[in-house]
Image (tube, rainbow, N blue to C red; front, side, top):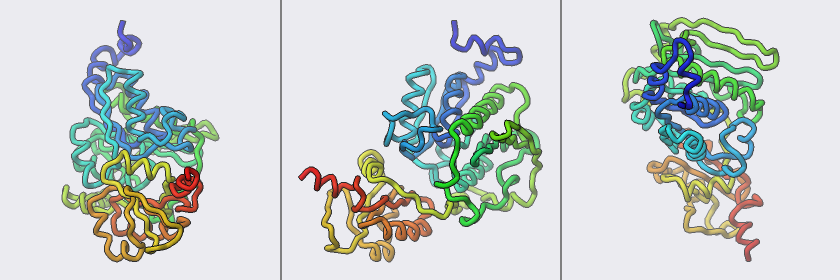
Length: 366
């Protein structure tokens, strides 16, 4: 008896639909609130190869909605943790983990071998970048998004007269138009619903089942239990905003954030230095500044020197900055992000004064 028996007996799907799923290669961008349910149901349905692209680690606040993870996964890389769960549940599925953030420099090569892309990212910069990459490579794109009690899903770059994300939102919002990422909030069930709908559309695209949600946006209102659709048409003026070739794409600045520099805990910062390639932690305090602290895994470059000559950052992908209290590192991270929009540059929360800093751990041990 096959684990797909209940799918085989479905009219219009059958064994032919199952074979199409088995041959399919789907890339899921982001193993977060949207990505987790999408990944689970794609694997359960029998999609042959699933790529998971995410460079983030699991934190405690993720657990209300990122249901592939639990307390035992805290601080693990999300792509690896999600892959472990799926491999254990469905060993007949090929899981490929991409343990890094997608950038204009790597996304085109990464997505080349996949048939379809699901974007479950939580920021505008990644959405525009993934959309433009899919247009350049001719890949169907299923995108989901949530905001507080509302969610939406659509299929871009598919069918006759296909539309893309820029037909819906031609110009990215400015930083002051984006809500503070840490204040919007979410009930975990909402991304679960939207992520599951994304998986359903992916299965339909691959198998040819039913009517795909192309050139339409499906909205869901959790508070009022309502669904409604909005039809889309190609926007002739939006095409000018899409890079016309690979060179232009790689030179496009997709750094669109909510205007707040992302912080990182000491635990996650030190985890990155041990587990991830091309990452560094920099002490930006002045020479001989108290309290004294040194480590062979941490560079010492005063803030002004780093801002004047940030060349050391050219060869790394992820940068963590710290100072005494976290204030100067926030300012330095903000300035460096403007110069290196393609890099992950974060401020270590609380600096050396934070209770979880290595300095306090050294003092406790002594």
